[in-house]
Image (cartoon, rainbow, N blue to C red; front, side):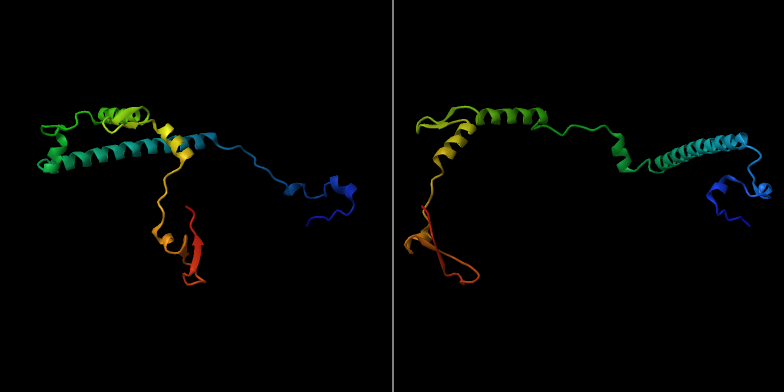
Length: 168
């Protein structure tokens, strides 16, 4: 049994008779066995990868031979063809780019819409600024005319009999 040390100064002293119970490893790790296991594991992984590759290649060729006359397989072997004439869009990406450029030009430039009536087109930024300064035209509400400028606003507590002044 272990001795209980009551005095802290005696802490560094070893109890007598217990040296034979102290043990440590007598030999080091066997590096050869660990290295051999690692190399064997690496070789097993490499062999497995090549075995799987060979198996997939075998299955691929077997399915090709089985489905040689399948119409879907024949269609996959053909080159993609252009649609028949008349082709409406020969280069759709380029045409879309040109269309967006034309729209940007219309949105950001001046021009005549109808010279006979004197209708013109102005840039969109200028139009937004003019509308912000002037405001949009307001149409009077037909419900406000009969109640002297008030309209009915339904509320939960009033069963729809609340009047509100309409600003015009």
